[in-house]
Amino acid sequence: MNIYAVIIVIALVADYLIGLTADYLNLKNQRSEPPAEFSDLIDEKEYRKSRDYLRTNTVFSQCESLFSLTITLLFWFTGGFNLLNEWSLKQTGNQLVAGLIFIAVLLLGRTVLNLPFSLYSTFVIEERFGFNRTTGKTFVTDYIKTIFLSLLLGTPLLAGIIWFFQSAGDRAWFFAWMICAGFTLSLQIIAPTWIMPMFNKFTPLPEGELKETLLRYGEKVSFPLTNVFVVDGSKRSGKGNAFFTGFGKRRRVALFDTLIEQHSVEELLVVLAHEIGHYKKKHILKMTFISIIHQGVILFLLGWFIRQPALYEAFFMEHISIASGLIFFSLLFTPVEMLLNPILQSLSRRHEFQADSFSALTTGRPETMVSALKKLAHDNLANLTPHPFYIFLHDSHPPLLERINSLRDFNSQKLSEPV
Image (cartoon, rainbow, N blue to C red; front, side):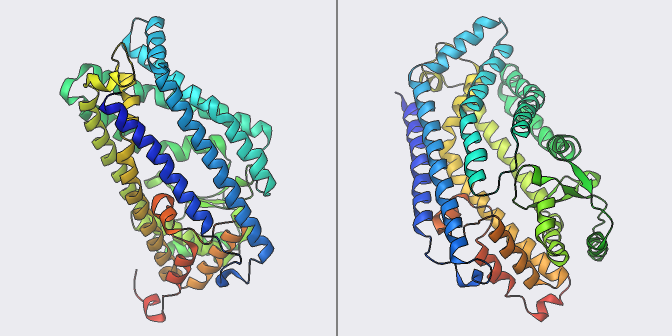
């Protein structure tokens, strides 16, 4: 084992142990009774159910993580990467095609190994707690569509990256970055129109009180609501949700049908205002920009590391290939991602507070937003008391109690301020 192998093994094990510690603290932070703020909506029986849901998912997630870590290390130290690379080279005399085969087999293997976990999560855990509405047919078709899209979109992207690193010398990282940036921006246009409708039915919001209320609000904040859709989320889960995606004419605001069923018109208004707040505050644009910069840094570092023979020696490789270098570098980059991820999650939590503030300021209904958040927590069996360390590592949204307290800080003077 050389220095690269030592660093990667330590990083993978540390990543697992840190996650295990965060999960343990998160479970220990649970209380015997629901917080007083939720006592009007969640009784002790429902609270016990939410704690059971958290505990079940936590143990399941740790089993999945341990299995993934074990398989990765076993495949590595039994020479699996080298055997697969040699086999891929024998299938074709083209390095580029061999690289695509190498990565495709790895991804397919991971997909197959993860399948039992996905089945258990959907049809055992989610079913047990009353959330699952996915049929066997929907599960299988989703699975096939996901693989198809991965091949359709991922193959040319991956082929371009490999080709540039094989052919463009020191400038390869820059050209690969341009491809990745273009791909990321294109997805913002393609996904709302072509990809998402492959999995869910998007129906324009029907005429009625809800649509009239939302349209009036859109005019008030100079946000034309021409693309508000109802998503048939109920075909897979009983959980409610809303999201905003896309840019310009391709942007869409989507409300799950389950969300509409469970909330009043006023509550749906403040939820929509929250989603529009993300757009008005340019959160989607900022996160897309950060993602592109992140890609550039990764590819710049990749350009140096894939030229280091010791990286391939760490994985017992007989022949150097760009495709295997991509995989090995992704493992080597683990400690850096461990440091970056909490920063990105912190920024995301800040954006959620800002979107809440936008909703409260523009609708003048912070208490309605409080009511909507409490209902979502109740209906989705949310963790009401997450541990700070778990929040720091994983949570893209602030704890519900913090969001509620922040909303209640608004006074009449703040509500009268212009947005």
